[in-house]
Image 1 (cartoon, helix red, strand yellow):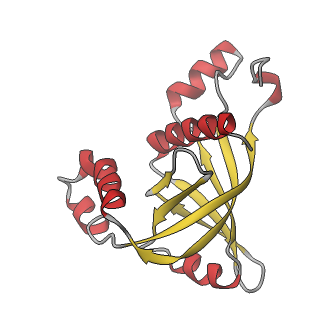
Image 2: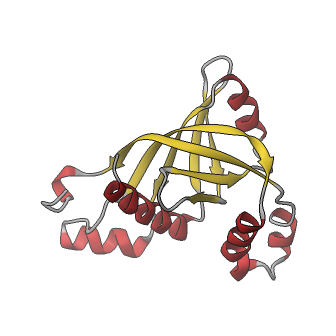
Length: 162
């Protein structure tokens, strides 16, 4: 992975989160059964192949990470406009998604910059009752480091430069 890949990965993840409001984090439990946890507060750092997310409600994720911190984070651009335009043109202008193979760290208290980022993300819906109920208690984050990635792609529809 290089900085050019990371810049492209950050763009695909941002578009996916804008469309679906979350990423999915896959882990396995003690019986090696997979679990997928939707996380709407995932952020990627600009340059060091890493990120963080607020971990408040994810009981299964917390339990699974104690046994195995390795995960797969998936972000898919589910925008109807993106898909319709791509299908009409017969070609994607960018990857429709990404899988990030990562290792997730321990819980820690969030810092002021992280609080500001999450407040910016939820600002548009902050006035709603649901927003106050589910996004009002963010205090802890988990850092993660990305070790590898795999694009989600449909080869017949990918531009030649991919």
